[in-house]
Length: 182
Image (tube, rainbow, N blue to C red; front, side, top):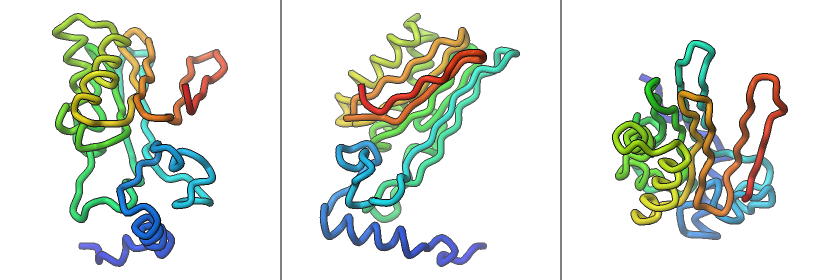
């Protein structure tokens, strides 16, 4: 067993105290000023969700999600990142998905899996399924965020309902494409 102080860093502890004093609320990496490099909570560096989805030459889909977490989160909170179907999901028959945002709503909606289910059972395209989940279902649950997804045909979707979402994609032989805002 690892001692709890192994996970302590003074930098993140100080960041928590600044968030509590200045904002008094949970901050996500893509909520307004927190998405900017001049964020008063984290003026020097960015921390946040990193997701990846891939389709290999053999037709296998994969998804991965990692997060730095929320600043000033509720004690004991477990986010959506480690929950298959909420934070990420991959099914070779449909899609690979990685999510970012208000984790509670991604968990309640099992959002990453929901994209796959809408494609498989309702016959929606990748874009239709991801838009339905992010622009309708998440909003109905009070959620903010987005996702990245690639389907079994190599189509890509990157919808988000927050102010911005760092994202990028590329195909073999093509220049990469990146974005922050719409």
